[in-house]
Image 1 (cartoon, one colour):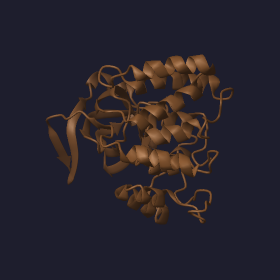
Image 2 (image 1 turned 135 degrees about the vertical axis):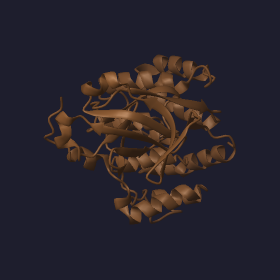
Image 3 (image 1 turned 30 degrees about the vertical axis):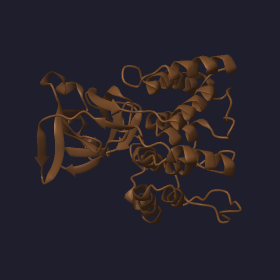
Image 4 (image 1 turned 90 degrees about the horizontal axis):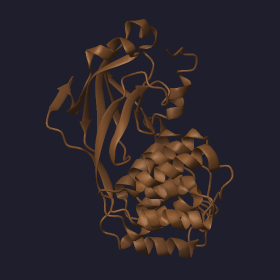
Length: 324
């Protein structure tokens, strides 16, 4: 394990251009009640007003930061107007924050490139609003380590060596401008979720599972799909590391945030080693790898867990709600 980590540290140090994702920049800036909402990307049509439990009048985006909406509940559903809302970005559900009456906001995490569906939900699954489109731009130069991690993930998603080799070839041919490896992997990931996760290999040759590799790559959509089938966020790989430890190792703050939202414990330590006889927390791993902002964030959440709104908490509050 220590040799494996040393190799990954060296590769990461040699990678200067890390991939990142941000929302498309729009032109109009909006503010309300001292909150800057961002630039407008959606205007609701009055024709759909009566069809929605929650009608979104306007949608706003702050690139790489947040999405905000202005809207209201249909009078027929006013009895659930105080319920907590989730914002759903493709496969990823994020608890919404109420800024003022009719104004809500949620953080924007890295996601799939291109157009994704966006809607408001009670439980992170069933839409209660219009289904909107949000376009994400993507500028990414894949590192050697990213490609290796994608290939490791690919072999866990398919049956047999030949299918794994075929999928890896498809991934290698992506230029991540016109063709995206994440889009290809998501198709196989969906098949794995609905068909193969009980029958295929649980770990790769390094002892990592699908959720650990998803965290390494920062693929929030993949972590969300793992949670849909009930995979735990705190289960350890064969070396004793959790997905949050790996997200910290690679500096994937978006993945770390989503893991925390899904209940990951930032206080868990890795298995003891000769170099670290007491183990390491995710915060200490991030610090040692040079991701100081992420390290401070994880340490702060470990001390003040109430700062993260858990998705499980939001979902628990909607038990018994009768949906249309």
